[in-house]
Image (cartoon, rainbow, N blue to C red; front, side, top):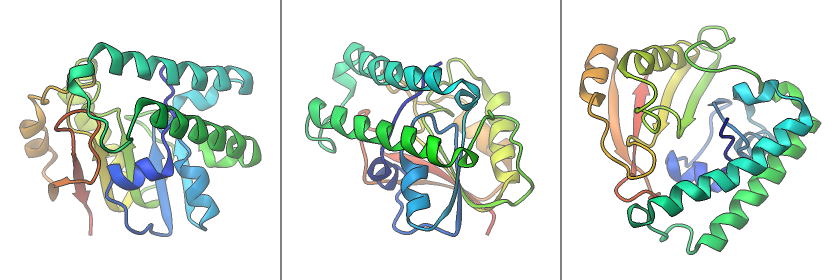
Amino acid sequence: MLVTSRSFAEYEAMFGLTALPASVLDCCAGGSGFTAEAARRGVDAVAADPAYGLPVAELAEAVRRGTTAGGSIVGQNADHFVWDWYGSPAARDDIRAEAAKAFLADRELAPERYVAASLPELPFPDGRFELVLCSHLLFTWADVFGLDWHLRALREMVRVCDGEVRVFPLVHQGAGEPVAFLPELLERLALPTEVRQVPYEFQRDANKMLVISKL
């Protein structure tokens, strides 16, 4: 189980966030610090991930392993990553370490914000959140989860959303190949969608998110 820690600043850039609505779901959030910071700013923020079902000590260890495993993926595909946004590998490591610390502290302080759940089934009522975010699951693991799974996952995020669903990135993990079934997926989804550029690039050319609107 890969439990990655990303920061609020990374989320702002990955998802082009300039302001947050009243309620946000970070879906399959891992050890990210986004929910902790969003809640500190007064947002009704909830994170969902199957890892939250682990005992506290095991979850903390999974977060630690996730940082190491993520670095291994980058190292094995070094030519497919750029460092403009982070500045250096050391800076990225520092950002991720702080995000992990914020996550673990908030998980202990407010466990109700962290729900053990996984796509394509979420334990939330219809229209519960104004914004639903999904980072580095859909499309990233398209070699593991196929078109039908992605369709069910997107429909489930849309179900619990009353505004926008945003998914980043739109390429495979590692070498960052395009996802061949993306056009067919969007056609079958049959909802208003937009592929929007964002001010973040780590995987080379992975600087776009999918926006699904219910507005």
